Image (tube, rainbow, N blue to C red; front, top):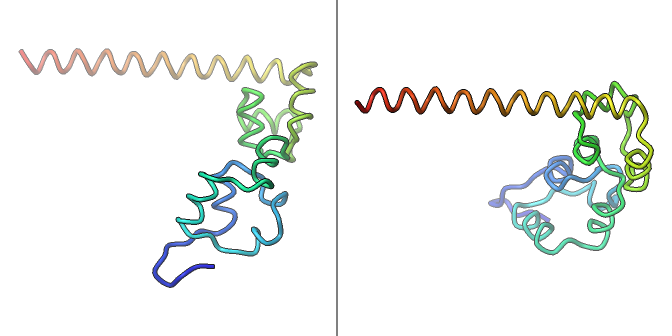
Amino acid sequence: MTSANSQSMKPATVAKKLGIYLPATPQEFQDSTITRAEFAELQANPPEWLAELRRNGPHPRPVVAQKLNVSISGLARGGIEDALTTAEITALLQAPPQWLVTERATHAAVRAQAQRVKEESAKKEAKRARASAE
């Protein structure tokens, strides 16, 4: 599947870059190495199995965390250790357990703090730039 001159990636790397759960992929995909050109083709023209995985899952933990708007650590604290399907994620969002409500609030607070720090840093940098220009 690969030539000697082309750069290739392991299936785990490709799955991570595609945001899919590797154990749910076809065995042929799991057993192969993928070239950069093949990876680009998968992104541009995903086969049906890839489109189905992206639509319905199971989704890897980073994707689950993003869809639930929590951190990966928050998933672990909530007891979510495995991949979830889109239906399971939807069910959690429709009737959020207390851990999810808490983790979403925590995640929002952390993101707000990070944004505040970024803005303060930008103001200080702009002040330094004005001072050095004078």
